[in-house]
Length: 216
Image (cartoon, rainbow, N blue to C red):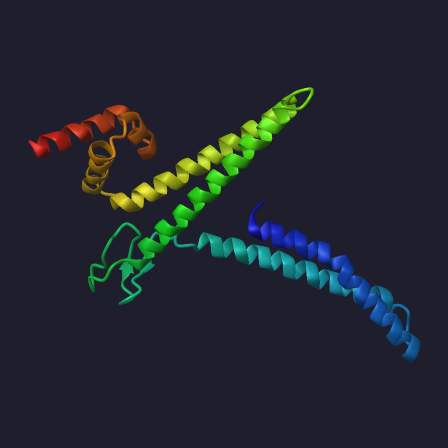
């Protein structure tokens, strides 16, 4: 569950407890002052409206902040000189300082990869538990597990593409260097590299041919 949704649910669950204390306090005040009992209805209603409004605004703000996250912004400002810089650039073109924002983005992507992997393990464990039940896994539960599995796979591919785009700099030369590292140094297959890039095996094979021609 997303943090902003979890926080909103916790806030809504805390509302009844807050109203109990408000009504309790009002009853004590009215018993002393002899005020109108209509306050027991009006004040909690106003407090509830304000409370819900605050939660809605907080959730909207969290979504806006997420959209302004470094992973979603196309252009950033250099932390050293303030010049415009993209995530893909290793160094600032103006002052020559290292792009710290690029490092922060790669760190965030690594954290996302870890979280996705944890969710995949939990999903697998839930599936195995359901299969081990007396009557096995139902069609509905199987459908839910498969949908979650597909969603996690899409998220994993999206994170991988973003990470590769940053590592390659979004250029052909950067892509060639990345493929060379994956194919020659890490001994990964053309199919694995193509899956990461979201390209065909033919396109990757052409890049490898280019690498081999450069080495020759």
